[in-house]
Amino acid sequence: MNPVETGYKQVNGIQMYYEIYGSGKPLVLIHGGGSSILFDFKEVIERMHNQFQLIGIDLQNHGRSGHRDIPETFEQDAHDVVALLAELNNDRASFWGFSNGGNTVMQIAYRYPEVAENLVVASAFYKRSGMMEGFFESMQNATLDSMPEPLKINFLNLSPDFSKLENLFEKDSKRMQTFEDWDDEVLASIQCPTLFISGDKDVMKPEHTVAMWRLVEDSQLMILPGVHGAYMMADFEGYVDKNRIDFTTREVEKFLHKN
Image 1: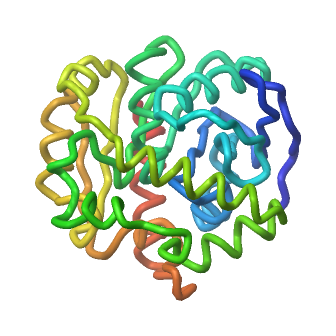
Image 2: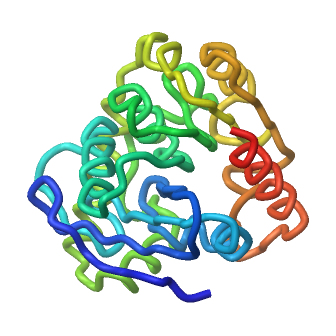
Image 3: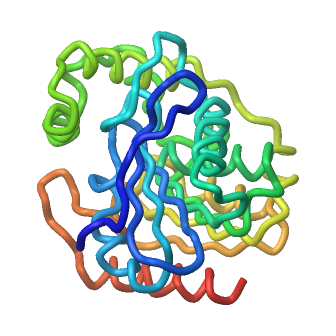
């Protein structure tokens, strides 16, 4: 599984890194907080590169992309992704965002409806009350030691500069600490076909994913057994539930081919 193209584009003042796999209709892959393209989407890419042109992007402060000394916001990530796609001469695509990446792709559909053909929103949220009990309280006391070791190792393998890891953690944790609820209109205004996915033991409550599904007209919903991301990626111990990921990717392929 080798990319057909990798590179950097100058986007909104930073160098943003991307990888492209396969060919066909474009599907943009947006990773979660503290992560990178292949950490979250390796299993998906292995299964779907013969179906779509998969465009993976490392967001600001993540992976191989450049860093900013300003607060991270989902809105800024949305601006960056759309600007990078324009640099790749791509003015319309489907998007699959996982965790914080799911928040980013919802902002893309809200702010750039002409760009979003389909959305897959995986393990995302839009209100603080939707997260499991104690989540935001634990974020207030988070330190770099709290960051899962596999995420730290992954980052330093891609960008071996400890000060950049510290910047990533500071910006990611501050974004969650200061998160303010979105208005329902952000979701209700989404016009493109949308599939919501989460795990039944995810960091957001299943009922919160249901509430999001109800706000987006004609959207689809899939709640699968397991913890955060287990339906699409390895867990932090490296275990891959191949059958569950096979199921998820088949359902996403059907959703995208139908719309």
